[in-house]
Length: 452
Image (cartoon, rainbow, N blue to C red; front, side, top):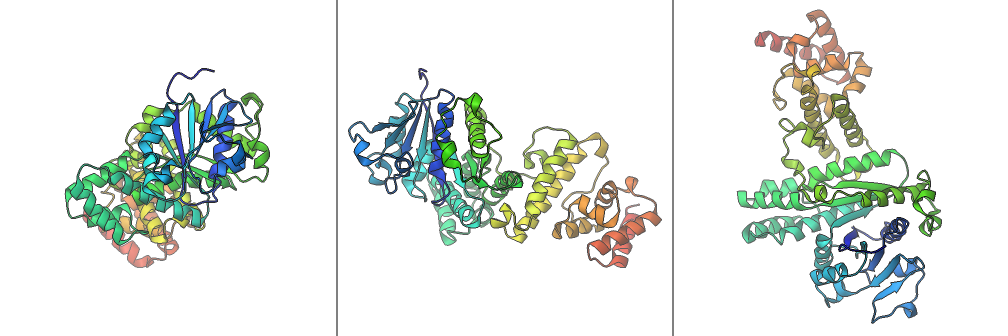
């Protein structure tokens, strides 16, 4: 199959070694080859030459003059380069050289870590994918890699004063700073604007290797949302690859796409990823994503939920998936956000869901402002969220309907039951939330009477 357009470069990165990055690249290359795509693997980590080892090649098989080695798969070749570490070529020069080759795809295996040349080359790729395992050390390293990417992008910003200030703030807490730290501590609006602009420009896909259960996929999607709040960079979930000791068998599959069963763990996951790349919307990928910490869930609830449309039922579905992932004590998000951070995210998520639900005709009643914390209804809502309870869970514990709880928390007077039932509901809610029952009822009824 002839190649007419310049190849797309995919840079696969990782915060640490041992996450299966090189193996994933080889499997993806062979999946693309089954779709008659010509693929060039680029081994940019001469310290390990992992691609060479995994393909069972030996130094004697490599033509140093040619630079390209043919593999057993006629559509997959390998290119070795120490340019990033040796400095013999700049990242820009190397990227241009690779784009001049006659291939459909360039899959680059980058060294781990946050060296300037590695980060620069990753920025030049059409698609940058961050690979990780769903375990604490790998995710912590991936978070550190995100910090490096943000700083690398900041270094290219035109406002040198803003960059210098943000770099100084980041250097004070190199392993713990977040978007909020930099944004809050910046002394000028120019520095804040530069930070938001940079975060909106960064486009990274997340690939989780060795997924062990179905809920890991949902949690990985929520992890992109959590990192969006934490760093201002909103990753897109590219997919997960299940854990399977038979990966070597699948890695060497040369069968055509029609013969690859999608229900077969590794083979199916990689095949799905390959097909998504063949149908990739590059224009949509290049468009700026919202800087999540700056999205007001009150005014832009569906943006905060990563939805531009959808019915009320779809809004609820997205909300519940995110909610369950944030509140899960030993889930993926618990490795990157502490309990206080998860509670803050849950409050924002709850506010977005309420406002998005109100856009549906069934929820058109006026509500109090979502961030007024002085009303009894809001205090009930905050107590529920602080305990990590969703509306449905609280309803099951108290036998008070979800709609009634929503109306009580938002103090929608027209939808509240008569005072006798309301008092009973408030007593049950207060007991479940470990609040003072009598005080809760008194404050709530007084607030309603004062509002007329």
